[in-house]
Image (cartoon, rainbow, N blue to C red; front, side):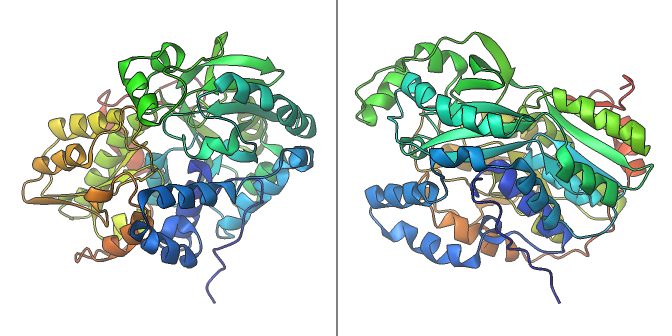
Length: 470
């Protein structure tokens, strides 16, 4: 009997978030399964497939409703227990021992590393969407309405740190009706501690995804900061002080603003979605000493810094297995397929989102490596022609790097960035890749170390064994 893989997480977290989706992608892989429809119910395929038939204003409304439907009332914040969330994460993974477990920052390349090594991942950060209407171009108002529910949440969960993130650029549709509360664990808590004790034997390794990316923030209260903006198209400077392209964007959106009136930052904090809160490290190290675990920190600054490393690791691993790794599978945000990447002998390259910085990342990688015969691209569609969004034609230009051909995976370039049918098609199209490879045994840590030694200082990633040695 196959295990049940559609366990609903606690109602207070978002299914559309990076952490939730990446837990599902990793867990499904470890169960020997692929990742259709972002790991959600197959029923999602029906509305997604019909989404492109609707006029664009109605598509926006559909996208908005899908997010609003996952948000929770602010008066329920004091009832939230993060231990309930930890228990859900643990239940997603097969009940067996593992030679290693990963903990920490969300990262799509990290998902592929976990899948290659056959290890589960325990996220530090999750998104709680709170049902509160606010105009997207009024960040000061957003800060104010987040104070009371934020305090209730933190009073009920003393081991959490709250990063209230407000991004009127990429998340413009969603923030009209919800507040983005991203919470970071400062302690392992009972659920994660129990998972490690039961699944990781003494002598096992804890890999810590330690993303050092920060963002300007405003202190709201104890363990509570407000982050205006997020990684993507617009820069920190543009969120704070505006620019010509911000002005043009707000005019297109028929906003009453021509620049955002941002709260004045008074410090820097780990970036809300991707950054690692270092206080958790103390708890990890204490447990490692008690249980005889090895701790290895994977340290990087930008989320995409890990992507070239993992792509080249896969290419090297394929070569060790006698496979011609000539196909590159480029993924965006949570539109990914770790099972079919390995099953088709494709090299995965994860991009944080669909913005200019991600396009630069993949171009820089392709400029340096031996050319791929085939390049395939999965697209993230978020419904907004935001500041810093390349056109589909600009994304299509990466296919020029392919020796033979390149193509989108289930995407309709004419509908980008409102091609919501992509969420039902990307998996179906990935399955159509004709080449098939036997699923390998997991990559062992000694093989990983061989590749690290061979790579030297080539990548913007460092490996710390927990004793300060790199």
